[in-house]
Amino acid sequence: MQKINIFDTTLRDGEQSIGVNLNELEKLEIAKQLERLGVDIMEAGFPASSKGDFQAVQTIAKSIRNSSVTGLARAHKQDIDIAWDALKDSAEPRLHIFLATSPIHMTYKLQKSPEEVLASAVEAVKYAKQRFPQVQWSAEDASRSDKWFLVKIITEVIKAGATVINLPDTVGYSTPEEYGNLFTFIQQNVPNIDQVILSAHCHDDLGMATANSLSAIENGARQIEGTINGIGERAGNAALEEIAVALHIRNDYYKAKTGLKLKEIKHTSQLISKLTGMVVPGNKAVVGANAFAHESGIHQDGVLKEASTYEIITPELIGVSSNSLPLGKHSGRHAFKQKAFELGFELTPEKLKEAFDSFKALTDRKKEVTEDDLFTILTDKQTEQ
Ligand code: KIV
Ligand code: ZN
Image (tube, rainbow, N blue to C red):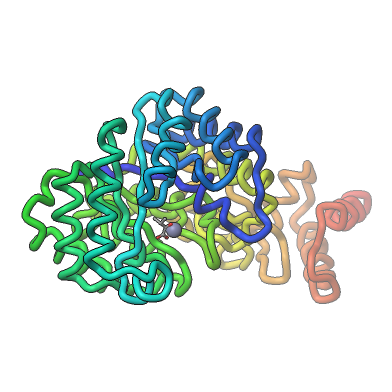
């Protein structure tokens, strides 16, 4: 079974979500929960970006022992020096250097030639390697870069000492097939690629971040980067909980697993939602409030008979105590009877039928039937018995 390393960037790329600004204590609380979740690596921030971020990365680096803590740096000596000061006390000092390799980014943003970019990348990795045992190098906008230029620059940064090579789909542009092919191409053409771990980092602009990450795994990626709840720049990053649960549930297909404690997923998701203020949509895969709720009568009946009829993930797997069968206009007699029983009512079949008819009539007038409504209906029928 292939082990996939999980690189969580909730505290760096995730914090780049509009309106999110975590203070040091909040970041530490999230870092501790990520450690309980079992992430292999957590990117605690971008130390050179602000004093606050430096402070938070340093505090996290000092207190987290069971996950490797990293920080982001541009390919500048000053960024690398600042990152070292923040990370030197971590259990396994690790640096993440990024530099864009696509023609669009090199021409307009960096205003550097490919030769200059190559030289900066090699110089930065060599410099970082003097202190950091683990150096990850990311080819920003890799999916829109020239593949042969990627081969050249990756070969050289590996010679300079990089231990992880990341190929980000920075703007969420790739399709799963293209992204997977990029991993295959790099492995086939970079002669020293066996010396490093290949990593995938996907954004969700076209809603394909999870599919792209899984495709990268099928094509040799051994590290996956993302955030909890998929928060991040623009449409966000790949949602780590989706990838981990997909690998678990479809183990027959992927034959790969993460070291995450899946039971910690729901709690981690709720904590991050609370501290970032980013609400998790009800229909969000794995962690949405409706992920284990069944509304239609046919589905509720099926689930009551055998949960696997409509549930491929058990709620317990991710730390949710049970599924829910909210009652609405699509609900059937079976779920209604079950709910009445749970609420402590024992009605004759005749009264139960009358109560069900009243409930159905109410669902035509009211979008959401509450537990109070059910109590009123059921109490009326019980007193008539
Ligand atoms: O999306 C991206 O390319 C990044 C890099 C800094 C790795 O977040
Ligand atoms: Zn990113």
